[in-house]
Image 1: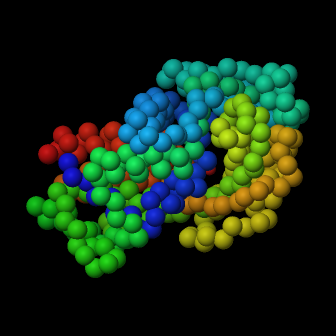
Image 2: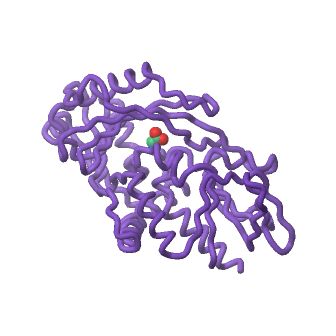
Image 3: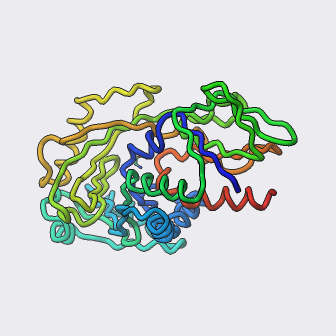
Length: 324
Ligand code: GLY
């Protein structure tokens, strides 16, 4: 198929650029639900997805199946994670209980007041910026046309085709199209299921490579280390429309939370940035054909766009090809 990607700004420049890249479905989903099944399917696809993109692009991708630890502050929290792990075991999610002593052995410098945690050995992280760079080259080498700084301003269709009016005044015509504009998606029609921005701050530290062996998470505080040692900490959630301000106080507050968790961190981070998660009222994401139209939806991934990318691509491409 001939494919054109129409990007409002720059390639992968929004949530895909900002995201921490945690691949941690065990702590993102409470129940053994369809949403969790889909997330696990995506996690399972990740090694092949990354291998395929590395081969197609010749670029390296910072991807590690390093395991993640969800931390518990109290015995009650530890018991609650254990109960959830039992429910999730139905879906073959592996989770190993860690005592306070285990934690201190595995992660020197971790908060010694924590009750313990659960290690999810099948989970990991990917640096979304390296993933997106490789994806771009892989797309270009496959003949995909990429139009940047070209916002789609209106979508229409008839029996024969989908028509996208773009900022430069052109009308692009296609047999079908996929709306995957993150939190901006539902601006393209009142009829579309709503998505809204949930702003999040992230901070980063240059640290010694290998100094943090697993993704760490305690409620909304998390730490993810890249292969280079660069370590990302998050986060917060704000319903702040499209306010792009990086708030110093919020960055300091995240840094304080992160340092309480892991004392090896410096007092202050070297970098701070924001991104807009595509929030949804109902359980997202919206995936599939919009009624009988030639328009397909792939948005509303909220906190898990990077995790859900390969399964989203597989589902949409399979459905579109089956519809032809
Ligand atoms: N996936 C982590 C976050 O949205 O902050």
